Image 1 (cartoon, rainbow, N blue to C red):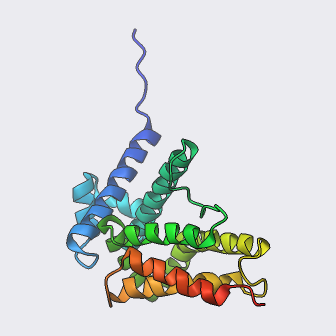
Image 2: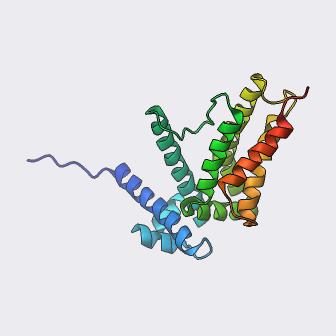
Image 3: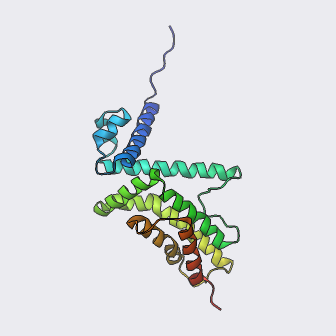
Length: 212
């Protein structure tokens, strides 16, 4: 008798989960959040909608997990690139030049915000988080807050090096950088460009400079 292995349920579940994530992100980018449905995600992923409802209570919950997974994969790719001498580590670099380091990461943020892969789901989750406080809190805790901490740590290092006023609250300092960027992105008041990111850094560092 030949040995036959039972199907690996965990592997099958992971394939289904990945297909659902890819389908949710694709549909939101193609048709918008309002027109994305659980039925549409299921059809695109090739699974039954009952499979989705078994794992998530709503399309917003599906999209949040899909986006967190996308961000995690992007960070992992950045870490691998950094380990091989490339750029893109999750932490803000500390080259000793605070302005250059902040411009580097803000430019990368601009590129990400202008990327349709990230833009559409981020806008959908930001809007949904307003009407669903629990979802908004999870989005902030799992994704936004860790990113803000990168800025806080770099500013604290700059304070230790004497490049930033030691009396400055790092949290307020980082909001001088990311706040205007997100405001322009959210409201689409003007194009989001590298030149704008550089200007934000230059203006913010004038206010953060050590006092005589």
